[in-house]
Length: 87
Image (cartoon, rainbow, N blue to C red):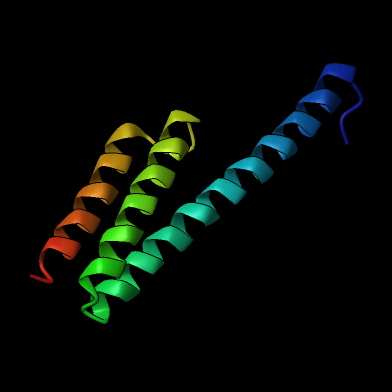
């Protein structure tokens, strides 16, 4: 355990941020899975609705600094491509 006051505070702040990031990442993964399940079932309307929600969730995570913008773009691109492949 740290002895210096600023180091103790750093530990607390890092725990808080890690918990927040974990929750946001979990929400992103859940929204991505919903899109993938809808695509697997070939349900175009459900996939479109889930895609809109997923893009929103991913963009929010990116704006909060949890994901890099290119990572966000890649995830959105792959999901959109999957939904468009249902045809």
